Amino acid sequence: MWVLSLLPLLRLAPNVGHITKLIKMRWILSSLINEIQNLLYRRPHHAPCDGIIALNNIREAMLDCLDGWDGKGENPHAQVERKIVYANNLQDLWYLRGDVMAIIASIDGEAAARNRIARISDMFKGLLPKGLKSRPSPLSH
Image 1 (cartoon, rainbow, N blue to C red):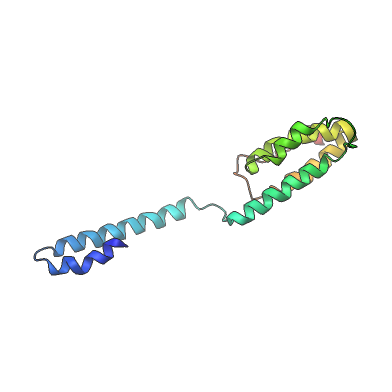
Image 2: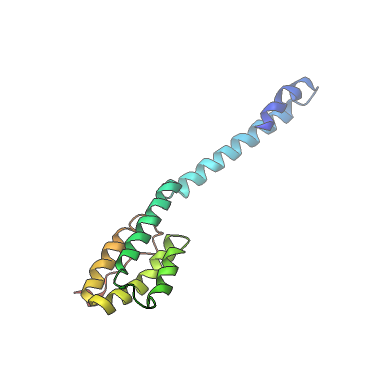
């Protein structure tokens, strides 16, 4: 925007009309490049607060799955719970699903663990890059 403030001054100077044309052309070119990049690299738009809300909802769902501890003695799942609580982003939580499934399977069995992890995995839809998706397992049939 500071370039636009120089335009009146450049018009006053003799023989600098070509400079104003250069500035305008440069501005148009950079605007055009920005628009093309926006079109080429368009990703699903999620407001930052939507991502934070989704992160917290998924975190809470994962922690709810680990509520099997009776509160007596040392919590055997404390390390995984800490990882979930301190996860920085959705990708961290995505990779913690395996740890959560192992804990659920040890408490309630593998079938229950698969059902709960499937519900948690559904919460990630549309929030992760395409490379991070659940793939169908031949064992699930």
